Image 1: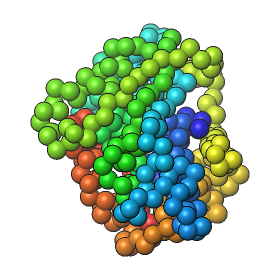
Image 2: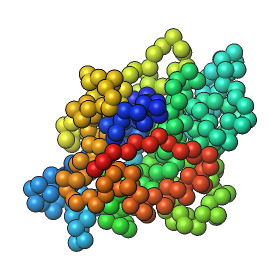
Image 3: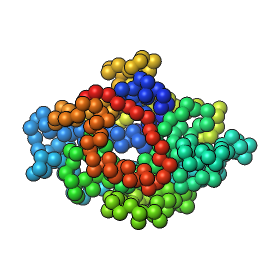
Image 4: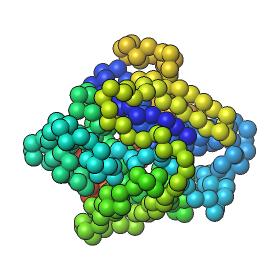
Length: 331
């Protein structure tokens, strides 16, 4: 479980992170990071104890891993519609007419980097965080776009992808359900974001057609609707994010992409300040379970050729997926 609505500027990531700052602290993204942390923790404990079964995973005959429960299906519950294309209709409906003028941008921007809530008429497009027009630029893509990508790649990240057995075990690591509050859903926007915007072009991308496992969006009337989009500039969104993993009895609070209480002004950020779901921390955990034959993080990612190839094709399929910040470090 995770909370969060912030994104760190691309400039800060490239200048000070070195794998120690979490770029995207939106709840949806953090929940996926804590899930991958849980997988790595499980493998780490199995390796240390010389066991073939952990809390969630078990070893295969090929010395890789799979979920112990073959019937398990993965779902994500979000208290509001994910930022980006899935919720742009909600934003347009709820913003005052006089404020909408501030979000009209030139048509040239649509083909390049479409920021947050900018240009309401451009639907079915990849957008970046943050949503506020006065925020520092971040090239982190919206939660709508990242979840759309996960329909093709599953929710494993670079550190966990090769740990999981190929085939059915890896396909079980896809989100099957996205659970959203019924009152907030705009059916046209949801269908456009997660299906319609790429369906007509999918025939041109034969290499990834079989990778697609479409999300099933289901509704809920859970009474948590106090957590929803607020466009009132007089109110300030919370800087902190919470990570919570009940099976591990694990809680961590983040602020400005690092552990809460640590200084974000250091250049570079020191190792003691990083959160457990930062790139460097996840990589260190992976290295405790297997040998990693790469000298840098970017080289490591390049070597996961299958996952990288799928991501490249999906970015081309969705269009205007601009380059994200570079966050490299030695491993």
